[in-house]
Amino acid sequence: MESLRVTEIFYSLQGESRTVGWPTVFIRLTGCPLRCVWCDSAYAFSGGTRRTIADILSEVAAYGPRFVCVTGGEPLAQPACLELLDALVEAGYSVSLETSGSVDVSRVNPKVVKVLDLKPPGSGEEAANRYDNLAHLQPADQVKFVIRDEVDYAWARDKLKEHRLPERCEVLFSPVAGEQDPTALAERILADRLDVRFQMQLHKYLWGDRTGV
Image (cartoon, rainbow, N blue to C red; front, side, top):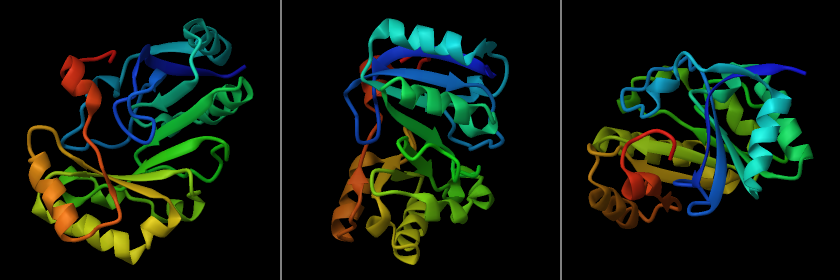
């Protein structure tokens, strides 16, 4: 069976996306081809421990979860992530994948909920967006914009219309912690009547900006 380099596996409350607040096992894989300026998981860029998928599944099962989230870094940077996702689905979990949107998602198990970023200019990685990934979104998936400033907001608003994203799946707008005032972002969403879901990072309010939460 394949193995992957894993930064951490931990049990916490989901801090973002549609299952926010639900107890979830997180599998954080190591490595990412991007360097977003606001990244809060840079510790996962390197290092980690190589583990077999069987070993990962054993640790996940010990928590007895309903929800499992595979995140990073960029999980799909490791090809064996696809096999891990298949194994988690086959084990009966409700599985989500947090992906930067810079890697092909066409082969992701259709039972996995994809939470796919589109990177605004303020991320420093706008050029990494793979817009062909949007064709592989399903209604249960989500597109996420992490917004740093007015320029990012205007860019994201234009992408909503250009790609008719609310017709494809749920869309999330999230402020960059400590840089984008969340109230101001919420008020802009309301003023522009955007068909998006505003979200903040619940885990940071509960435990602060640290690992393993």
